[in-house]
Structures are given as structure tokens and as C-alpha cells.
Figure 1: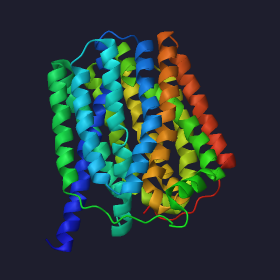
Figure 2 (figure 1 turned 120 degrees about the vertical axis):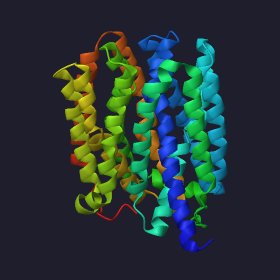
Figure 3 (figure 1 turned 180 degrees about the vertical axis):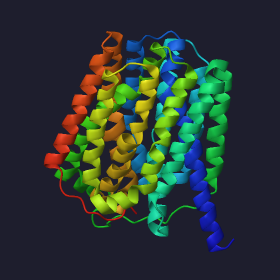
Figure 4 (figure 1 turned 90 degrees about the vertical axis):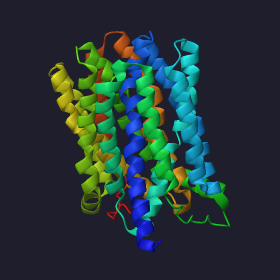
Length: 392
């Protein structure tokens, strides 16, 4: 096979993986609260249930990242994780017992938590070597999530666990097939005088990392507290499963132009400016539900998802790239996921569940808006200036 054909195969395989695997996450992000409610859990129980998963991720995600960086066997680790998460999801959907539900969900989290950060790190390295734009791959993840949100909402959720799992298993299986077709990227060696541990410790001593972490926590906690319960909030206002899925589809489609143009904006304005802007738009996004609680209005607000979640994620990836050496790419991506999703997931799921169980839906949106404003002000005042180099 010629070099050009191999590169084309790798590119198409990355695109297929992003589309299919991000599509499967729709079942956990969009519909898992609805599935748990159908199994008899209250909003407070759902919040506590969802909060246990980030605890597992907090411990296991760094270990997966270290294993990938130290062994270089990213493909084998990813395939093993995907087999495990497929088994766990089948067990979860097939049980009604609350204790078994929790055990299966934690098992699912154990195997799902490394997939996206390891694949992002792999694709990042590929983009660097081939002169590609990471955003041109990541936008396919948003399209996959949007497509699966509609499919799950239309065909799977109301049809029962068997159909839902069939959609999930087919997507995971096809994503694994795409993964098998991608060639490994040559691994960047560690500094031999320092080794992995000393390299990582040097990163953690950097004060910029901890200012960055605080900013991500302030922006991430309100986002997770609302996003995790978005489906339940809409359902409580009379929305159908299709409308809930359509809302998330709209949100992910709004990310596509952001990812497509991200490199241009990072070069033009810098990653720190884009992160400040994303937090400021988050403040507006969470304040808008205070204007009206109509389901259609809540769905329309999802159009701001690209300027908030999408912009924050890709600008943060660029900034993290500046903070960590290339040999620690998987570990750096894991740190980003911990600060932006995992730890905020623990706090946000608990906060959202507690406030909704107490009937404080309006208060949840108001608090989310204020925390996002705090994140924007913190980063505007204390962030170091970021170089305007291309993302890859």
C-alpha cells in the first residue's frame, strides 16, 4: 500500500472512529438519567448515582493515561477498554436491582473513561506529524453525537433496553473496526535523564497548571450540574424523548463550525482569550432559562453549546499542549479531562441532583450562571498570556 493510500486510510479511520464512538456517548450523556428514572430512581438518587462514576474516573483515568504513555500500546489498551464497556453496558441495561445497577455503571465507567482522552492524544500526535487540523476530526464526533441523539430518541429509548443496546453495540463494534485500521504514530521518547515520573512532576509544579485547573473547575461544575439533568428538566416540562434528543443534536451541530474554524481563531486571538469568551457565554447560556421555561426555548438555547463547551474544550486542549511535553501527551489530556469533566462531574452531579430534588430548578440555573461569570473573571485577571501558535 502506498504512503498516500495509508495516510488516507488513517484519516478516514480516525473520522469513522470519532463519528461512531462519540455517537455511543449519547446514551450516557443524553438518555442515562431517563433510563435510571425508568428503573425507579429519584432525581437525588440519580445525582448520587452519576456522581460515583467520576470518582472511579478520578482514580483510573490517570492510570490508563500513564499506561498509554509508558507502554506506547494505545491501540491495545483502547480495544480492551471498548470490550469492557460493551459488556458493562449490556449488564447495566438488563438489570433492575439498584445495587447491581451501580456496580455495572461503575464497571462501565472504568472501561469508558480512558477512551476519549487516549484517542484525542493519538489523533493529536497524528495531526502534528501530518500537518492536519485536530478540529477537522473532532467535528465528526459532534456530528456522530447529534445523529445518535436523534436515533436513540426516535427508535431506541421507547423500544426498550434490547433495541437500545443493539444500537450501542453496533456503534462500538464498528468504532473498534475503524480503530484496527489506524497505524500507530511513532512515540516521542521521554527525557532519559529524568524519566516519566520526573517529567510529570515538573508539569505539576508549574503554577499555570493549577490556575488553569481552578478555572476549568469553576466553568465545568455548573456545566455538568445542568447538562447531566437536561433530559430530566425537559421531560419534567412535557418534552418527548425525541425533543430531548433533538436538543442535544442541535447542541452538537453547533460545535461543528467551532471545530472547523478553531485553528484560525486560536492563531488570531490566542487560547486564553477564547477560554475567557467561552466562560462568559456560559454565563449568558445558564441565565437564559430564567427568562422562560418553555421546552422549545430550552432546546433553542442549546445553540450556544458550540460557543461554550466546544470552544472551551478545543482552546483548553491547545493550552494544555503548551504546558506538557509531547512525551506526556496522553497524561496531559487525562489531566484536562479530570479538571474539565471528572471532578466537576462529581460536584456538579451531586449539586444538580440535590437542587432539583428540592425543587430549586431556577436556583440551579442562577448558580450556574454566577459560577461561570466567576470563571471568566478569574481567567481574565490571572491567566498568563497564551501564544497564538496553531493547534497542531
